[in-house]
Length: 208
Image (cartoon, rainbow, N blue to C red; front, side, top):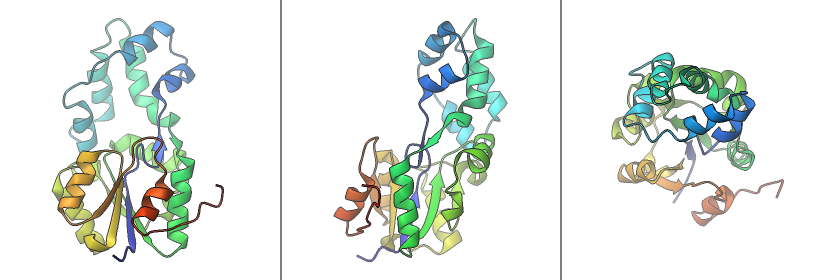
């Protein structure tokens, strides 16, 4: 099957955040770091941020309500965490190799508005490779809602049968498959070059 279009999630596919290490680099106290890391999953929290239902400041205050006694540290952590993300070098090399080989490349990402602007402007030098994309805060819907995939398809005339979608979450790749996309789920540590080669897209990693 011909593959001429690649679509990438951003978080945990092209960039990652070592949150415990980031908290240290922020200079937060050991007590605050421990309490922040022990916050259980907050129902609807990330979804509300990524969909643009609430601002980053509102989200920071919401998160801080789960860290009594260290609210200021918790708010700071949420407001500044994107400043500590780093590219996943191997996966970025794959992106660049694919673009050089003539593929169209797009992003499809769940991301909060202010954090997206930090990522675009400061933390990721590979955005110039993209031919376009859709981000959730702008679309006002999040993966795996089929609407966000269809928005990407319609905006860029993407034929799903000719496109390969990468995401670290199976629910998101499953939604893409149901729309006709080829997909690869990329949990941490997955070799993107090997996974793509298994589907017939063979690119050489010059640094391997």
